[in-house]
Length: 292
Ligand SMILES: [Zn+2]
Ligand SMILES: [Zn+2]
Image (cartoon, rainbow, N blue to C red):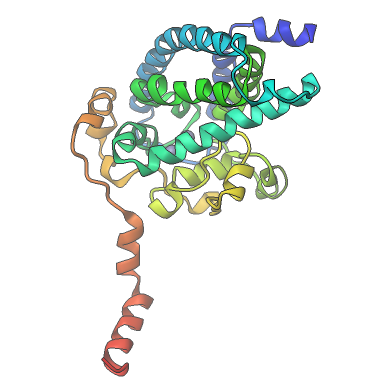
């Protein structure tokens, strides 16, 4: 427990910066998964998101710490009613935060107002470790920030559990977005329980059938359990959103404004369905040969 407390006392921002430096360096030296046409432009815009992320985090962290501590002291939440060993409460607590985040994420795809903010994260057409930061600040603070407090209120979680969640989760959040090739066997083993980079990249696929899948950050078990798991080989993926597939729409300022603009969703899945030649053939046959 002493070691754990020491680990948690390390400023999370240092861990994030450390991981970004490591993975960003690796991305420069090995063969990457995606090619960029305008890498400096991409980095510049995501770096601006990074600045907003760190500033937003300062305010959110203070509010979350205050709220979770208050809830815990009031004995609010399920874990106050059951007697479990500390280590089990910790593991279950991390899993429960991940599950609540799964539902918040799923709602962000289903509720049009939330999607306006969440699509900023999906707008990146060439992913690398900096994509992790590409989120609209309103979404980070008011929506995903709240998910941890809600999880704490339902399950009675303390600050140590929240700290462990971020300690375990942050490497996942960053590695999932790296522009590196990961072998298929990682998905077939580790990917049975955890979200692997290839599995998360399926979530960034343009085709909405895949965009609306694999919502979990740490435990892909939630998608398997709630019926939203999908798989597509990494080499077949097309990343981003058609409606943001334009240099102008990849800039920081445009993306910050974008939730307040009417950007129509180009549903690639619908487009594919009507354009699929085999479906056209079936349609023609049924029109010609089936009784009307
Ligand atoms: Zn999403
Ligand atoms: Zn992502």
